Amino acid sequence: MNDDETIQRVLEGDVNSFELLVEKYQKKVVGMIYNMTRDHHLSEDLGQDVFMEVYRSLHSFDSARSRFSTWLYRITQNKTLNAIKKMKPLLFPEAPETLHTRNAYHEVTANEFHAELDRILDRLPVKLRLVFVWAEIEELSHQEIAEIEGVPLGTVKSRLNRAKQQIQEALKNRKDISHE
Amino acid sequence: MNNNDSYAAWLEKRRTVEPSSDFNKNVLTQISLVAQMKSEAKPGWELARWLEWISLRPLIQAALVIVGFVAGMARLVAIFQIILSPLVVK
Image 1 (spheres, chains in turn brown, purple):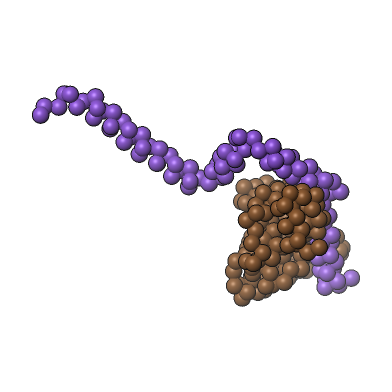
Image 2 (cartoon, rainbow over the protein chains, first blue to last red; image 1 turned 60 degrees about the horizontal axis):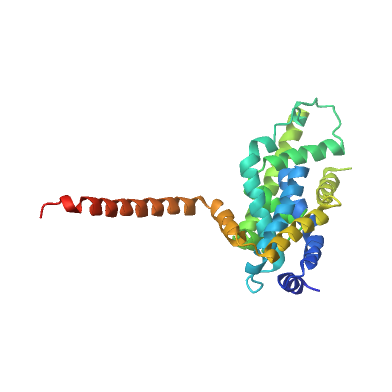
């Protein structure tokens, strides 16, 4: 059963069919929110809010205008951005220790490298982080991201390039500092 | 492990975020409640939905306040006209 058929069933009153949609998309929705906010509780709560909103607004979804996934991801994105606006100072406290302060001979383990990448991603401007999360982590196509964000395809590509560039530069700076 | 491998491993780690096992159940419980409320069609349900919708839109709230103020002033003027009309010297 495809999404449109499932939606039709839900609209006809079969609430249990909504479970199919939740089952299919919950990982992407919660994953996206977590990767933007890095807050497990928030991603669970907001994920539930997203599906509630989807259920409430399902009658207004027009399959001729967009795919269901695009519509769902747009709702997810809007809720996530609103949450980030409200909670930004609490979400990303400065880490007490960064690799910049380590001595030159300290071997950087994979976990530390991952932690540094986490910190770099957290500090990216929201628009760049959003495109990076959608494209690189959630593996959506550039075209779908453009539709979700309502921007031209070229804008998505340039934002993604800038995000990757900034991550590379931040990693390079870290290396330079640790080798001084 | 070089940086490229480690970068790929990091992306993979970020992709493995899973919702809790009762996520689906929680969503369905909430939705069933909403569906039940809808089906019971209580008289205040639609009004409550409208109030919730309006409460999320400050511009509409501001517009309603202005409309209310103008209508109130117009009503006051009308009342004063009625009260004062006998006193007006023709």
